[in-house]
Amino acid sequence: MPTIRARIDQIIEDVIRRNRGETEFHQAVREVAESLEPVLRKHPEYAEHKIIERICEPERQIIFRVPWEDDRGEVQINRGFRVGFNSALGPYKGGLRFHPSVYLGIIKFLGFEQVFKNAITGMPIGGAKGGADFDPKGKSDGEVMRFCQSFMTELYRHLGEITDVPAGDIGVGTREIGYLFGQYKRITNRYESGVLTGKGPHWGGALVRREATGYGLVYFADEMLKARGEAIDGKTCVVSGSGNVAIYAIQKLQMLGAKVIACSDSDSAVLDPAGINVDTLIKLKEVERKRLRHYAEVHPTARCLEPRALWTISCEMALPCATQNELHAEDARNLIANGCTLVAEGANMPTTPAAIRLLSEAQVAFGPGKAANAGGVATSALEMQQNASRDAWTFEYTERRLHEIMRRIHHDCHEAASEFGTPGNYVLGANIVGFRRVAEAMLAFGLI
Ligand code: GLU
Image (cartoon, rainbow, N blue to C red):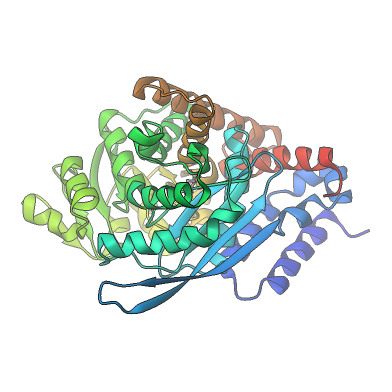
């Protein structure tokens, strides 16, 4: 019999061999698998039934052609993806990403993460992810609409409110969900609200869904601080990104008395010692769809830096909310040297493994995305509940539910970390909580 450690190493090796070149997927699997050694020791039945091996193989992977016509009448071809990773706990659930970097390995890493994240929320949702290598940057409204319609013309046959429920991610917001929902409704002849989440509030969307990932992240960070006897009030923060997650994380941080002095996009970082103005961010990014550097034209206290210079700014809290592998070992060293004591991930896998190691060694509290950014998908699950009951909830009620969910997620991850002898290690805690829930359901279903 191989030792548990050897068995885990073998699983990782097999994943690398069977999914060649998909480096982000390898990274996500390694991070989870390596933390499961104590769980397998306690539950030999998981190893016996090859639960980890089965979880690492997506249940289904759909790849399709997305042809569309641009404004000049030229034909364009993109590649669409939907990976239904695991449906042990509920219908496939997870966002769609439209970004030129999208390929199968990105969708699989995101889908894999989503399985655990969704389980951690405690809501009845399986894990999935999808998207396309379409670049929405610089495209007209009409081009985005035609792309979304073509994308849905293939994808609709794989979806359904109890089968697979996409939502947004990078490059997919309420506008895109609107075009996708409109096309789904038209093709299927069904006003099936629960087939997509992140809808507009007037056509079935949950209030707070827009704010949910960012607000949830800050609630989670608040719990992390409380567990150390600290508070958000008065803390200096930097937030990477300036999309949906970053904007509403900044807003909630400010509501709780923090000072947010910097954020970024892929072109630049903006440092505003007077505090980032959220209204300007919303106007620039959500209404005018402009680059962040224009922020400095409106606020003379602000100055533009290279995007990566963000991590050299002195702060007590850093929230990476842009994209995968954006915070490197060198950035972690800078944050530690400048007095940062908390990092919580608003994006999916933004911190490299080497950076996580450095932060942990330096006793910086680290909140992994699977737990810290789960408020978005949890509110999607609330939207599904709302749609199933044909109801409409208030902002206050929905936000209260989100807050309770984030508190519970923190509690569960914190407890699991202590149970397995690594108090304060949220990476281990989150992986264990998510894995155990999925594993128990898979065991109950037999070999399927
Ligand atoms: N894309 C988001 C995430 O990474 C949201 C998914 C959803 O709401 O289904 O969790």
